Amino acid sequence: MDILEAIILGLIQGLTEFLPVSSSGHLELAKALFGDQSVPQESLTFTVVLHAATALSTIVIFRREIAQIFKGLFQFTWNDEMKFSLKIIISMIPAVIIGLAFEEELESFFSGKILLVGCMLLVTAALLLLADKAKNTSKNVTFNNAVVIGISQAIAMLPGISRSGATISTSVLLGIDRTKAARFSFLMVVPLILGKVAKDLLGGDINFSDTSVTPLAAGFVAAFVSGILACNWMIALVKKSKLSYFSIYCAIVGSIAIGYALFM
Image 1 (cartoon, rainbow, N blue to C red):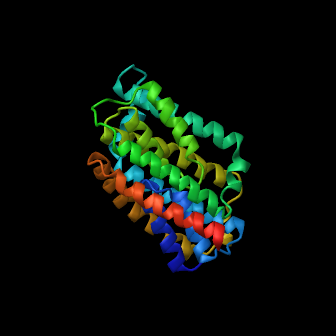
Image 2: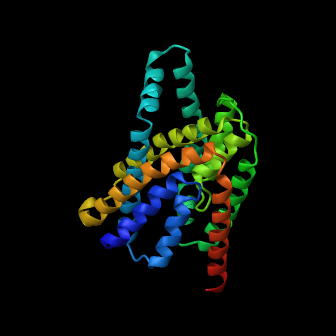
């Protein structure tokens, strides 16, 4: 993998991790277009680096909220910070269970299955369109909401279904305030990303010595910077009910991907 390709993939990861268009789906499409010839270990190493970059960008943007989560966990009193911390933990449970129980099956979906990506992008488009038409409220996330949003996050582990799109759309359809829905969506994924990165590192599947450092660094910086920009932009767009634009985009890209898979 050369530096230019690493930067492009980093930009795609950073933008699409937060914008509701599926980062995993776009990375699969980009690799197909590039004719990715990376060996599995190199590809996994690069993916882990990109996810670490977007996790770091989320931590930078929501550093105050994350500090409150830790504060709530260690206060051991039934206050708003403790409740919010528990909601974040509850929202993670479905994805953790599915991720551990079906790890091999999920990994098999990330092997150039363009038809699947295209179909799931159409699902994302439908979700975004429904959410954009929902009425805005000032409702907070409840514990029951956290379970449902967590289930939507687990489903979004399929390539082509946007994690942020699925969780934000689900939150909005449940009647949660749009800004609060976006913030909860971005915060709930940070522990999962960091946990997955730690698991891959400790599992011995990652070996940085066999991978060129320069493309990794270029991809990391590109993903981190674009992630910060995309996260702030996404919060503003959700607040202004602009999800329909992304619905159209996902429908177009999904249709192109399906056509490519069927006729190319």
